[in-house]
Amino acid sequence: MKQFTIEPIAGADWQLADGFGIAFTNSALWMAVTALLVTLFVAGGMKRSLVPGRWQMAVETMTGFIDDLLEANVGKAGRKYVPYIFTLFMFILFGNLLGLVPLGLIPHVHAFTFTSHFTATGVLAIMSFAIVLIVGFWKHGFHFFSLFWPSNTPVFLAAPISLIELVSFMVRPFSLALRLFVAMMAGHVLLKVLASFVIAGGSAGAGLGVLVGVPSFILMVAISALEILVAGIQAYVFALLTSLYINDAENLH
Image (cartoon, rainbow, N blue to C red; front, side, top):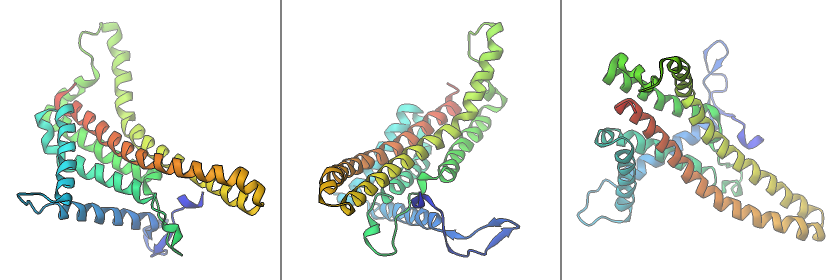
């Protein structure tokens, strides 16, 4: 599990308060790298050429994809959330993909998947949930609580159903963060286990190397390809669920 260990790179003795360290860690480094890459990706596609190049077309395609996602789930009011959902989607996507880059082939350089930590995914989920609450109360006031009171519900069922709806609503940020964290962590653990089989099989001799190492290596390649797909799917699911939660705040559905 060492691949998930958060280690300080600088400022190991920096303290915000007694017992609260603020060291610059490997997780913070890869978040910064991801943020920089997302910024460069967007900046490179803002040339606004009449005949767009591949880079500009890629940025416009992703922007259009997020715009369509929000329009389908929120309506015309969802257009103002495109910058946030686009940034959220690209940040998670780049973070997921960077963790799969085989930088371990370079001495002393190791990729770190910060989305495999519940603290990182939890902050992203809390940000989205905060937007839902702020928009809901700003636009609807206390009428926002009608979201937990299903219409045409018999009086004797209204109270328990409203309680269930409230609990379900409050659990949203937890489930949103947990889904991404578990998916990324499980994939990396599986790859690490298969890698240990390859190394152990190769060290045990030609027989076990062929019997255990080769199938494990082939499976590693297949799962690595699957992990690339999962990286995109999990970023999409996070963006999709966030847009659905924003729809509740905008339209009280």
